[in-house]
Image (tube, rainbow, N blue to C red; front, side, top):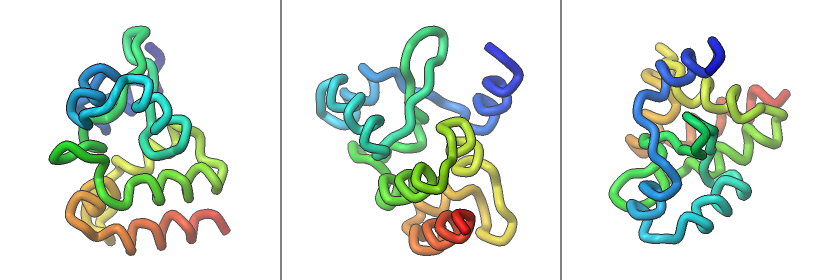
Length: 119
């Protein structure tokens, strides 16, 4: 694990394996892999296993607004690590981290900020 991994781990906190995420979402692990490929979730290897941030899943579903936000970030050229860092870094003007705002149904402002970074 490199220094960047530990920085991201400190921001993200809890990770879920594909198997755990699949169980929580009531889908197969392969479907979770497809969600990652389609930018509905982000996945990174932790300890050799593909994992997703636990904060991306709430009440048995992907957090509302997350897929659109991740697509905007990917289209803006953000790497997976950069997108994770942006999603979990607190912003006093938001307030809170973008993932917290999405969880609180404040996705419009989060997507507006993500789109503004593209220009």
